[in-house]
Structure formats: structure tokens, C-alpha cells
Length: 363
Image (tube, rainbow, N blue to C red; front, side, top):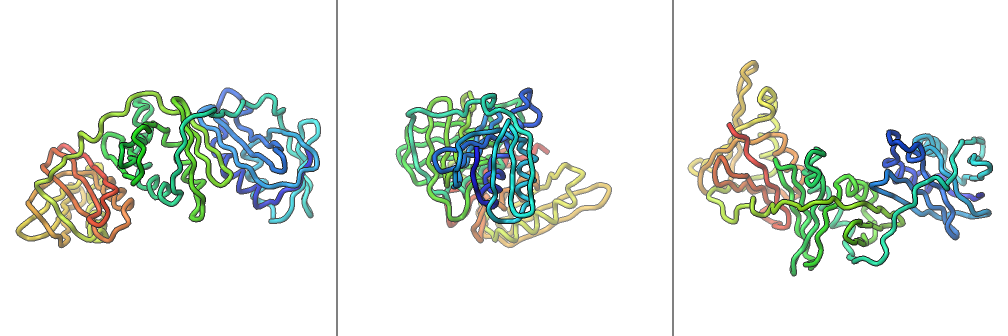
């Protein structure tokens, strides 16, 4: 193999794919990235057997070929080089890299030992706006569970009906759901959250549409020359919509900034109680107050003006509230509560497409 590629393009591709190269696996070659020529392009790929990522970049190919090299070393080395053209040449499973004042050799392994990159033959296809899916993933991904004891909850549930597509995730303590105005009544995918995290990293503000191809076992996300193929999570996702009340006895609408401020201050006094705070909505005073107590330090009550209907008190985790507020973009936030044992639902009064559910802390 012999080719010329720009340092900028190769560094970007390595940054995209190298994160999933596993240094802890039983197969040493899984800690490598695959470099392979395809027509007049260079394909950079990595896999951990659950997720496979490839990015194709432009290159001047003089001689076809392939090699696998250590992902971490390759990424750090290429990232340390100045911008400009870089010459790559392979001989005897060794990769020579030359540019200007640099002449290096990296020992590689035969590409024949690299796992076959998964493909999807046929399958269903749907296109999603990159801007819309980027916002959605930022709002939903952090609510997925990281506990492998319940594998189903480590996935993001993508499903639809005749009018909307829904993307939801929960760790059983909180839930985020985004509805997209797109008909997809036959779609039902349970995608690992870490796979979608890689997709989120690959998306830019000027990215093209994301093309999703899927079958019963795998899904492929393609955008801007990057392909991410992932196994789907096996299992049935809980019927989370049953957790979301259709009506609320108590609501409060206030500035998102104000709720963020009083929650952040109160969380400082809630450290002893694992972040537990008591939120109250007072219809007579038209205010939302948050109270927190730390027996060793003191106590705090913070108040914000609000438009209220009904009165209620609920105990919640302050960190979950702060995380939820960061997921919204609007100026105002609406708190919807039925009682201290029922979930609190946060919505944007100006945008009904996203909701965030926080379960109460039993006090």
C-alpha cells in the first residue's frame, strides 16, 4: 500500500473511529485500526465486535493495500503532526509515515486477522435531519442507564406511529422523550446508547442528513462519509408511556434560568442527602420554592416567581433537575405534578416535542 493523504483528514478519521478500539479485549487486534484503500479513497475502521465505525477520506492512491496499526499510538501520532500532505507506505506489516521533517515507522498486524466489518443487506431505510437528530440525542442520551444489570435500559428506544417518531431513554429514575414530526409506524429499534453517542460525536452543524438502515439485528447510521454499524439490544422495552400522566393537578411555569439558580444553590446543602431536595409549588404566593437541609452545615430555602395552578410538594434529586434543565433550550420551563409519590414532568410551554420525567425520592 502506498498513498498520500492530508494530515487533517486522517487525524479527523482516526479521532472518529479510534474511541471504540478496545485495549481490554481478548483479541489484541481489536486495539488496532484498519487502514484500507478503496478506489481513490482511504477507509479507516475500528470495531469492538458490538460497534463498528468506518470513515472514508480522500487520498491519492499509488498502490492498493491494507494494514492494521495500534489505534491509540496512531491517533496520538497523527494528531501531533503539523498540517500538510502525509505519505503512507506499507511493507512487511510495517507502516512508514513521511512528511517534511518527520519519518516514522509503526509496526502493524496483518489485515487478514481483522474482524470482518458488519454489513446490512437490504433492510429498511429512513432519513433524519442531522440538526434534529443531534438536538434529540443531546436531550435523550444522558437519561439512558449505564448499568448492565438491566441491558434493555442501556438502549435508546426509537419507535413510531402514523404521525410521529419517538426517541426515548430511561434509567428508571428519569426519562427523556423527543417526538419528531415524522411518520414511522413500523419502526421499532432498541439501539445501544453508546453507539448513538458515537453518532452524536460524528455530527457537525453542517452535516448532511443521517441515513438509517436497519433490520431485526443491526442498525447502520451513515453521515458525511462515516458509517456506524451496531448490534441492537435484545429485549422488550418497558411501556414507559404509562408512567407519564395525561393530566396534572399542579403546574408551575417559570424562567428556566430562575429554576436553575435556586436548584443549584439548594444542591450545595443537599450533598449529605445524596442531592435530595424538596420542591414546593404555592398557588397563593405564585412561587416555586426549594428547600434543602444539611445537618452538619445548615439549611437553605430558595424561591422563584412562577405562574401556578394548584399547590404541591415533591422530593427529588437536585442533580436530575439540573441535568434536565440543561437539556431544554427555551426561556421558560413548566413543572407538572400530581402528588409527592407521582413523577414530575418538565416541559417547555413553547415546544411540546420534548418532555423530561423525574421520579420522586421517597422521603
